[in-house]
Length: 208
Ligand code: PRP
Ligand code: URA
Image 1: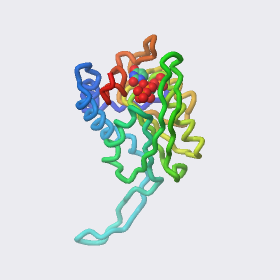
Image 2 (image 1 turned 120 degrees about the horizontal axis):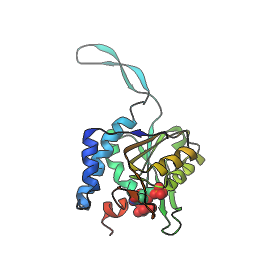
Image 3 (image 1 turned 135 degrees about the horizontal axis):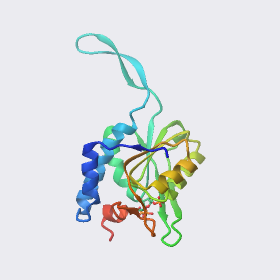
Image 4 (image 1 turned 180 degrees about the vertical axis):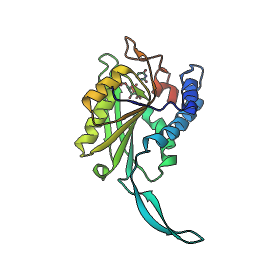
């Protein structure tokens, strides 16, 4: 199983607060934004740099700036939306695409309903974001769409993952590294993550 668990103490603390069923949507949103910012720091760790020459107030010097592909952030609707603002605070020049899909409540299969990506997406590193990786169906489908647009460099970032979803996504897209804040125990009979945090979209938007 290929997985990068970003278990910084600040992230673990905030994930625990999000898991708590008594955390209200306002705090849940704020915590998801903060964790996304912290995770973005790790997910972008391997971005390539180029040498540049600048002048400080004291002298000319050679230094480094980002030099590789530009970034696109692609949230999977709905819950992925809660991760965009935190990431944009660190990478404000990123473009944002959107992929809408939901899990059919009977079959648990993902159903796609929206896809809008930046026109130059194939020239970018795409970071797909969604708080939950359960069966892996939604993430695999979203990444299928992005690959169909010619994107070669894709990463997937989530908050909580189940081993079943990690295995499924590794199998469907072995070239896509997965970053998660927590690797949980398993799925229950309704394909919810145990212990998880419940339904991320409903908790984020207060729809239940
Ligand atoms: C949740 C979550 C993921 C998906 C994960 O979305 O945000 O997109 O489930 O499950 P999977 O790995 O088994 O596909 P949901 O389908 O509840 O849609 P919503 O965000 O619109 O509520
Ligand atoms: N989607 C969620 O929002 N939560 C889960 O535990 C599984 C899928």
